[in-house]
Image 1 (cartoon, rainbow, N blue to C red):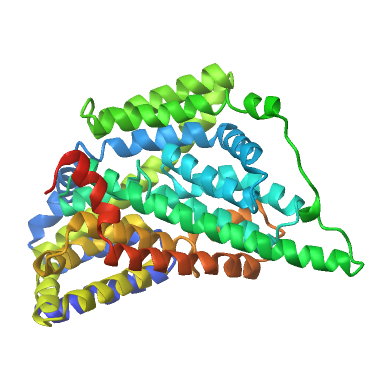
Image 2 (image 1 turned 180 degrees about the horizontal axis):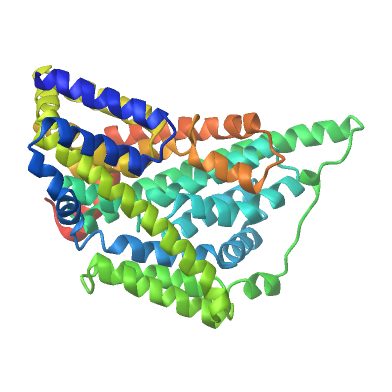
Length: 449
């Protein structure tokens, strides 16, 4: 059987098994093991566990469960609600300030927790009811939280970036730094749209009221004293200090990513004990249970994805596919567009973790051959995968929003996220025209490559 035929069969069987509804980790593992049985030496089956272990025996991957523990500690506490309340208290006078507060709260929480679903849940559970109570349309309220939650895989510490760094053999510290500029860009784009949309809805509410209709909560004037604003800070500032401290430890060269993750997790637990008095076994049990559950699920997907990639490499499927793509002699930017389109299609069905580990052996060689900076591409790919978190049919954040706001129709949630998808496309275009948005900060701090 030719390598092209074998590769087509490998992909077709993978799609059939995945569409059967089987969990992704088991689907990838079964396909990989099946092809090992039929197309590889019989002895290869004896080395499945060894191959998985060797592929996962990376000190960088050790940081994943520790960052998950840090994120669970913050996500399972009232920290998200307090963070949102503090930002709203200080920004309520700005037009669209409530929407901006949600964007900033999502960004800060994402940087502390590193998880998109956790960010959606923690900020959305407080932010969506507050926005709706103050007159914001349900679709807009849901859309801004769903989009803000996607920042969890772009702003460091990002588990997605950790996996990309391993797959692409790139510096994790440089990759984390490269995510900061685009993260700020998306925050500004989302905040700008929040102001525009809030003013639009305010004018509509005012017009209805002037025509004798009901007075919307949009038109109510809210006021907080300076004392109230200051009182909101003590519970939030320690977590901001934690975020800054972790970043300084990592980028200052004082600790490795794994040591930084462990330090962050420990300090987050200490802050919960000191600020929220969450130190009893009954308080810590949900945090540890959530960490173990998510870490186990994620590491199982990683292990099976790496086994899947190993089989592709052994059978020369990934090498042949990469050579075929190079042989097309596409122009640099057409090649990039085709690859990003493929990532978008994969995002309909797969989480970012699987997309990275399954596609890296195929797409990275042609990109390297075309002269693309793989750090820059990692950021662009992350933004595109962010889109997968909020577009149907398997937009994870959409279903998180439905879980915390079940009365908002799914159709309204989808239309609510649509403008933010367009803003992400704009961000990708800006990164292509001005790559220094991503590469400038790491080059300045760590030196040009």
